Length: 485
Image (tube, rainbow, N blue to C red; front, top):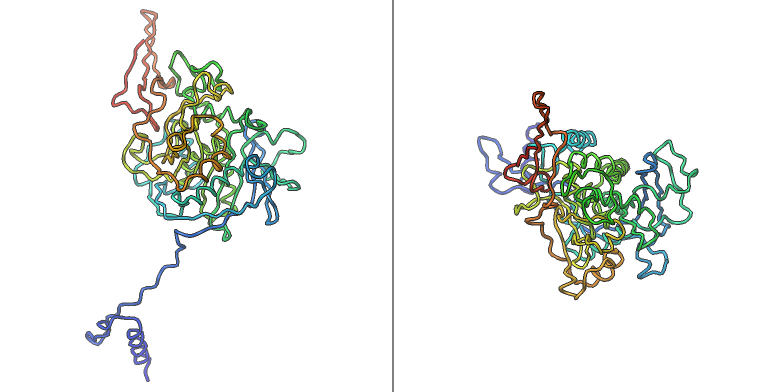
């Protein structure tokens, strides 16, 4: 029997098993085959994960910028869940958390390599504004992300965020991975920098990074409060804590007159001093080097939530924050790249992948903790920003539970025990609409100010461009006013 006949018999058998009857009809001596569908082996976007703590990273920021170290956590290590004052009385608990994932559409840069992102941010710093990119540079990806409609998932993320506050287990050995720093010679290294707890699922296919938030001196021992307040006031105030309450800590010298701020000075100060954001980027790249094929999700509470959000916007990562103060002001000033036409106040649908969970009785999350007698002001914090990036998922504890605004409700332990666990479902997530930060301030760019000297009159004329309505990523004025002195 010839090879051709063997082939025809094999094809006929395959058609009888898998093909429609019509495809076995001879056509000029040939068979028109409709081959059976072979599914692509893509991982499901909706599934259940079990995360355990794998590593704890510490990246120096202010006093020790070269410090970078980690502790590896093994299966028999136990770490407190960050809520010991309300549930556990200091007893160590398991670090395994169950999370459900779901399909998530997120708009992000097509090229998210370290070199590309660093170049864009450096260009933004040089220009004093975010780099304008065409729509071709962006993509909308359908990826696996945390299911924000599932209560147990949100609760697990809150526990991961709380875990970032807890000290490493006793007996763990720190490994120096930064080089050039002997941390055993200095007693104060643990008070400098950003700490991140890294959780991975059983397949090492998904990683959650939980970033530590603000250590408030009237809540705890103020472990990193000096550096925290520097970053808080850079991210959350209109002009580095200037021009507001007397008790606010000033972290730059950019105010030129009443409600007037030098924007080039402001952005330079923020980019040079916002070490937590730079530390978070460094930490992210080291974690992705260990888990190169894993999906990365982010979470954090308070300042940790703000830094997580900024990191998520930079690299297009799903992010869940808790009680984060409004972060849109910092995102704009850092020059983070954004899709064309994307700004706070737009009613169109945008795919940031950022979800801010909070409640109406927390003055920090609501942007209200800035009066002269507020606990934030008394402690030196200048929280003036009002607009969040992404989506706000707000529990109405004032309307539903009769709470009053109180700084005590800002604690992650209170959020877990008294809010998330008490509600039967997660709140609806919505975008900020018609929101503007620091609208009463005038900002001018000193580097773009032109001065023309007139020899004959020995006088100078200075033209200053002023933005009357600064928005998220730029000026929201229809036209820009010009004032001549």
